[in-house]
Image 1 (cartoon, rainbow, N blue to C red):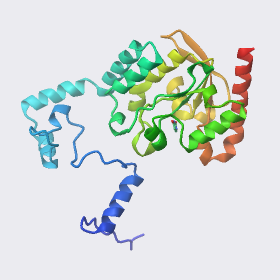
Image 2 (spheres, helix red, strand yellow):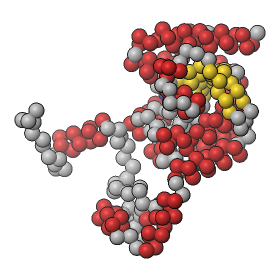
Image 3 (cartoon, rainbow, N blue to C red):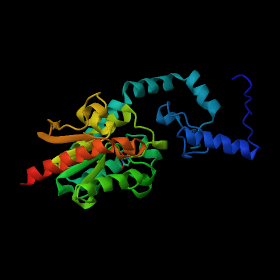
Image 4 (tube, protein in one colour):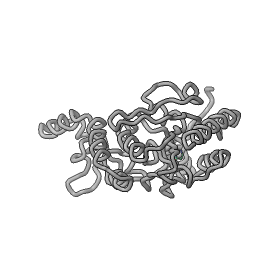
Length: 288
Ligand code: URA
């Protein structure tokens, strides 16, 4: 304490620039989107100058402090739309209109209501066999999934493959999706607003697949789709019902630990192993 000196950022010093960039990556800002900052709190039509260039910081500040009467009117209109609810409503309409998995994937790819899409390289929809009877739902794509456009292809996917192998299945004998189709920058957890917006898509996804058994991998999938605030430690290891009243569906679901969590907490693999044995037994009894 006390004697630590801080070197100020110096744009002419390569080491200072490298340290500044490393700090940004460590807090999750790992993608360059634009050369100039854009104030995304402003209504979209005010975010760019008339010449199409991004506004300068001073313009942004001046707009924020001295909005014209017309700008004030527009701001009121936009903020009264409650962007999360409006986006969730449009996701709901797009999801409801999709009657096949291909249509749903196209609808998600065309959807512009979730900001995560602007930083992602790919929309990650699914992998595996829809009529396998077994559907896994994870949280959101990571860097490998974002690059390849497929869920669970990175290290946690490799562990999921081994867990599937332990119950005599491979990826072609299961179907895999995520709550979020786009990678949150820096692999952060999706925000509640982001999951609210994308919830209609994963609900429709499940309704179109209609698996015999669902497995929710980790707390985000379990809490979002079971509409609970209970954590995964409380939820895992027992059969619950996933209920989708709109589609008249009740499907048995086993919430279990996310493979990424198991990689950090290997002592919990025994619990996950027991969950997978339960899943295997349930699938066997349903196909008997
Ligand atoms: N974690 C997830 O929840 N989903 C993926 O697709 C990859 C990692």
